[in-house]
Image (cartoon, rainbow, N blue to C red; front, side, top):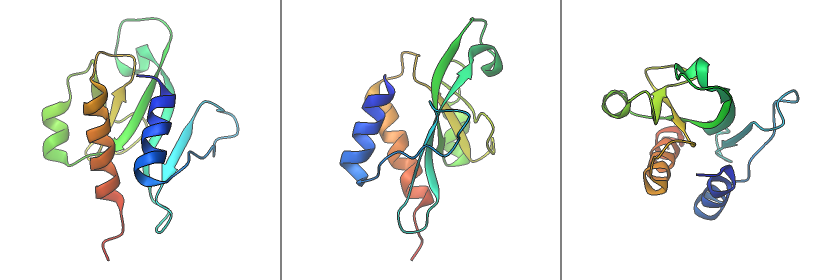
Length: 120
């Protein structure tokens, strides 16, 4: 899956555009709720080796909030990992270079959006 597909999905479904908040990392982007400003998705590049994979180079990953019980079931250390640079109990990282289905990624984005929206 390409980052552009993520941008398009989030823009169309939630009406949210990506933000570039890390000056030193132009490939990184966040998506947040307009109302409460909470992040629900972070796109970033990560080194395969930092994810525990025995590959050279980098991959795009999505950090998404996830229910802890679901996260523990989904983690397979190939497509879905404990979150890179986030709370590993409540967040996951999805490897966009893996064979994960687009629909599964979209479902996880939806889950993250719901978990981070305002409770009111």
